[in-house]
Length: 140
Image 1: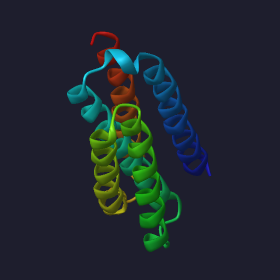
Image 2 (image 1 turned 60 degrees about the horizontal axis):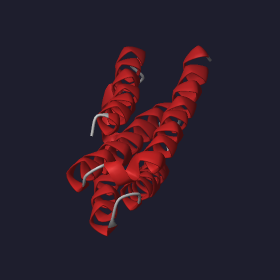
Image 3 (image 1 turned 90 degrees about the vertical axis):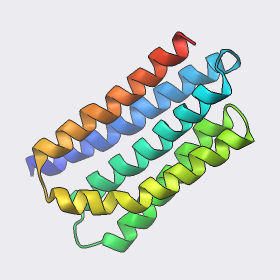
Image 4 (image 1 turned 180 degrees about the vertical axis):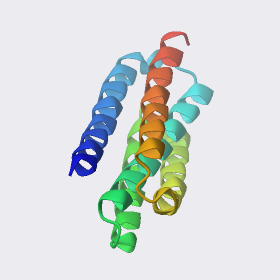
């Protein structure tokens, strides 16, 4: 019961940090170069795809194919949104990286097999990546 609630909170915080980062980057998009923009799109699309896939496969372990499709769609959508802030090449980079990480995410989650320590460490990594994106865009 506790693990399910914690996974739901992690899932919510991932989208919350992605939304905050997106709104922050929208204001600063003219100051960010294309190389940093590509890295931001890759971090956002890939990070959201893999974190949603790991969380959802641990929440619903018998729905592997559905979770794969959902994580692919989340990764492609978030990668495209973040990449679209900069230009079309960056949009394509975020899209493809979200696709690839979405395909791999349920495999990583299944290998974790309900390890709350792994998932918590992973969440620190993903949220830290979004914080690093905001810090790097501020210093650009």
